[in-house]
Image 1 (spheres, rainbow, N blue to C red):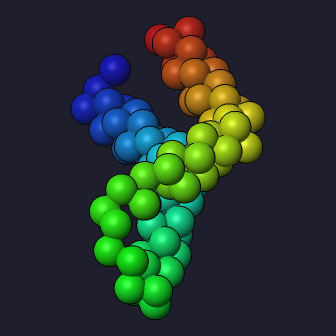
Image 2: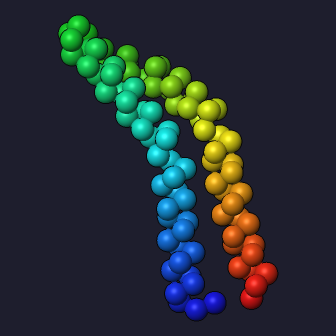
Length: 87
């Protein structure tokens, strides 16, 4: 395996990491912004109010996106296994 192939595998791994993390992070971001907006509009300054809805939303998003994450990881593993077998 030469340097270009190692960089290619590393680039694919970083892109896969972004694809795996993005849906859950975006859900957490949206829920946090919505709760922050509600707090600003109602002038409720409770710091712990954000955590329960955000945890529930992230848990639900993980349940929804788990098949996609598994498919992405499985495809990446098949690609890596094919490269190893091709050496």
